[in-house]
Length: 330
Image (cartoon, rainbow, N blue to C red):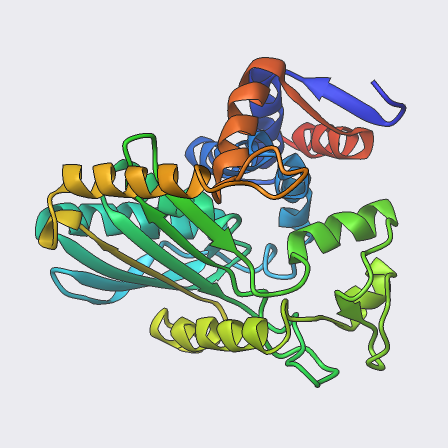
């Protein structure tokens, strides 16, 4: 292993993560939910959203604020809006995803929002849960200011990801994309490592382009693809209003829409036809030097299978800090 890196089996990494989360005050079930989320991210190849993300939990400004039980603000047979009680988003949005599955199972369709939570993790994790239960899923997540509007120099939008999942014969087709040019969680890891950013993804507090992660954190990220990313990020922020953003004084608004495919076509037809679509796309003649046409989510699925077997590599500083957090447990 390179100097400064640690290798653990998945079980060892899971045990360390759960111990660290219990060490900072989460109960066993909460620690399991948090750790499973980041382990899955690491398995999919997203190291910045893996075990390193657990270090961000106690550093978040809302971590020390009191937590309350998650409760419904408004509910019908097919919908619910929840107050997350200032619980961490990986826990609160997981509960919202489970509620979405339950309502879709009972009524064929579900619309569920969650607010008053923070740091929710990867949207793909949640829509994959819903698709594995047999439903089409759409999920948006709006948050506080991190991204400047196109032409602006101050952050006003969140990184505002949007995700989709559709059942197929070979596991769900998943698209999970942020609307910023760089992800906020990876920015936090770059700050921790003092590692430069790519060109063109951030500005400093005076609106000047920067590759310094600390200067970007004090300034703003930029939207991806100009007006397209800005427009999509703005729409996700607006959908956050439906997820309760602002109702409890929190800027976060998470929205799930899920439905049974057989409201429109039989589930097996959905799976068969979407699988056939993917095969047609992958069979398109390739440009010179292109080995394969890859479908969104395909590389993550392959990486997950490989790393389940081979284990996980991550920074020594993350390993040491997780052990320190675990040691805080009474």
